[in-house]
Image (cartoon, rainbow, N blue to C red; front, side, top):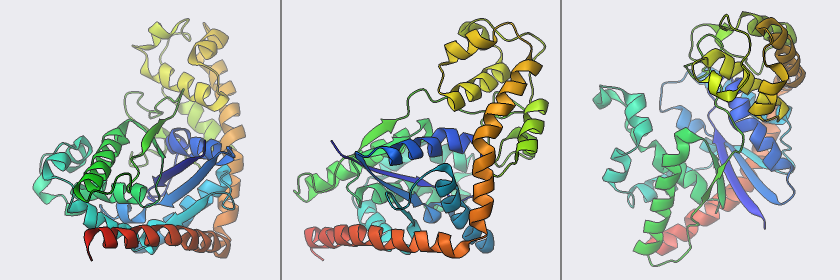
Length: 333
C-alpha cells in the first residue's frame, strides 16, 4: 500500500549528526522505497518564530536543500519545496486556527519549554506553531508523518484538528488523519562534550557536534576530543546507564552501522576508548565526509538548488491550492 509521507526541516543552518540520524537518514530510506510518495518541506515559516537574519535564512534554505540532495534524496522522485512560497499553508493555518481550541494549544509542552518562565514575551507564532504544522500536513493528504519524541504531541494535535474539522462541517475523511511513522532503532544523539545534553547547533563549542559540513580531519579531531570516562568499554547495556558519554558514542556507532547496540557492545567490550574512537571516526568520516563535499559543491550551484525548489513549488502548489480551494467551498466562502 502506498504511503503518502510529509515531513519538514527548519532551515536554521548548521545541520549536524543529530539531524542526520534523527531525520535525514530516515528520509533517504523513505525516498528510496518505491511504495512511498514523499514530500519534504523546508519549513521557513516555522523558522521565523524566532528572529532570523534575512541573508542567512535565504542561504540556510538552499543549504537544507543541498543537504537533502547530498544525503541521497532524489528530487525527481520526491517533492522538495520551501513552505513560504505556497500561500495555501498560511491560509489553511488560519482556517484551522478557527477550528482548534485554546485548551489544546495550552497543553503543548514544547511551547512551555521554548517560551520559558516569561511566556508573555514569546511570539504568537511560537504559540500557534503547531496549527501551521497541522496545515502543512493536512494540505497534502499525508497518510504518515515521521516524528521524533518532541513532535509526537504536535501530531496528536494535528489529528484532533482534522477530526474536528471533518465533524464540524460534516465532511467525513476530507482532512485525512495522519499516522505517526516512528523510526525504529534510532538513538537520540547527545553532545560530544556532555552526554546528558542533546547535540545542538546552539551549543557554543563546535567540538560538541559533528556538522554535516565537517571534513574528515575535523571529524577525527572532534571524536578524539569527545568526552569519555576512565573505564574500559562496558560488557552490557545495563552498565551504560551511569555512563552517558560511553552510551552516546556507542549509540552513534550503532546508528551509523545499523547494528544493534547489543552487538556493538559485544564487539568492543573491555576495549579502551582510544581504539573504539578510531573505529568510530572511520565510520563517521566514511558517511559524513562525502555528504560534506557534496553539500559544498551544491552550494556553489545556487541555480541548480533554486531549480529544485521551483519544480517542487509547482508540484506542491498544485496539490495545496486545490485542497484549500475545497476548504473554501466547505466553509462557505
